[in-house]
Length: 124
Image (cartoon, rainbow, N blue to C red; front, side, top):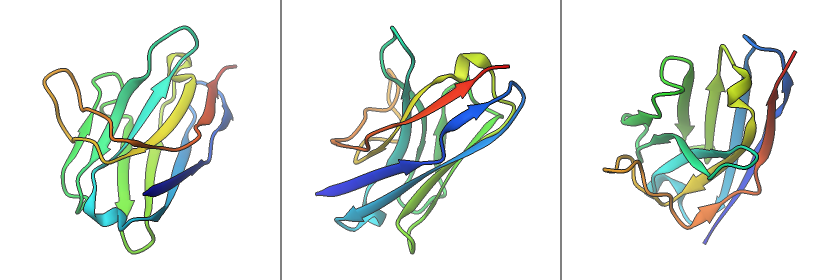
């Protein structure tokens, strides 16, 4: 079992930056793929970014590529999402996820472990 807790969300103006963090506990997190997904009002949850077990392989949704960076620190059992040049369409609840796949034909499949989510609002 893995317990995930996100932090770092908030309100930011367009063009601004935020850094989300996910603290993991329980099963050794270094053995599983970690990722971030998001869900905007009225929309389905969607893939944002995933990172492999050692942190050397990453995958990003086209909509965030070049603006977001996912990283992990296995010694601290944390996964981070650095978000730069934020846009209003990035507004969503962001969820940390564990145990899924890095890639997938229809996008990475999420794993069974989810955090409670953190709200990110991009607005002037």
